[in-house]
Image (cartoon, rainbow, N blue to C red; front, side, top):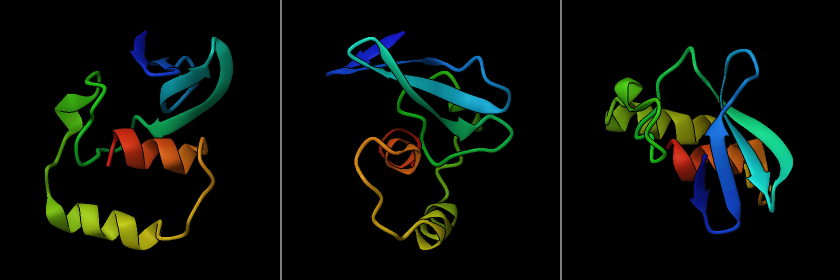
Length: 82
């Protein structure tokens, strides 16, 4: 489990999810799909799936261009995977 401020993030136990997030040791949500890559995994467990491809990064942000509330799965994905 890695600490990022008030967030504790660990590899997910849920099927097809990359990470589970805990805030103050209380389970919050899972994010990321371990069947797919990402731009840059800042946590590091799935860094073998990093693409560092700006086209993929731009396409991701076009698909996810809405403003989601803080602490949503999309917010964590953008912060730690994209």
